[in-house]
Image (cartoon, rainbow, N blue to C red; front, side, top):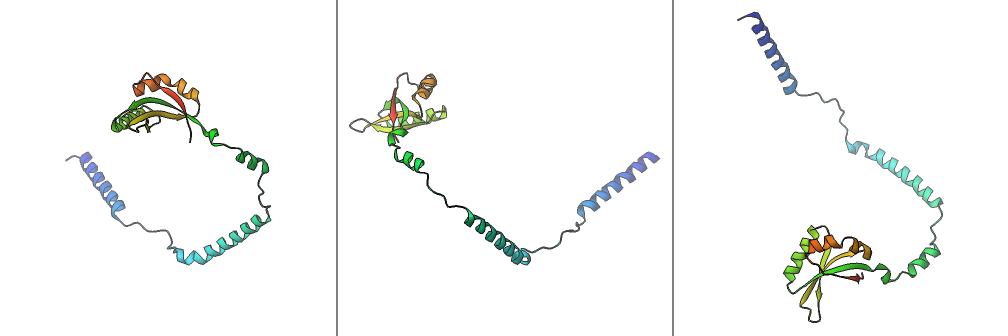
Length: 160
């Protein structure tokens, strides 16, 4: 063997031994053992002092008084203020088919639901929506018709 191979072998073996020594030897724990139970009385005392200081600050503040204008506005709100708009795209006789259509519309990116329809309650209407404004339906009508596979539709108010 020539000298270069011997030096390479010695270097490789020493590097392997150093690596094994570093990896396999237990590491010295430099942290102190600290038990929460030892510090619990101190923590409780600090929390008690902070709580008392915050309680004093809150007691100094004025109590909240109701704003008469807001109360008056709330009294004037009517359920009709919450009217929304829906587009009825299908009326189907099968509840299963109506549910499948709702799933398809939902996957197309629009909210949809079914509702029992007709005087005999044997039909199921499929609605797209609700939308806040009627213009929201009009702006998306082509996409809604494509997703729902319906060229007809009736926009109506839907109340909460």
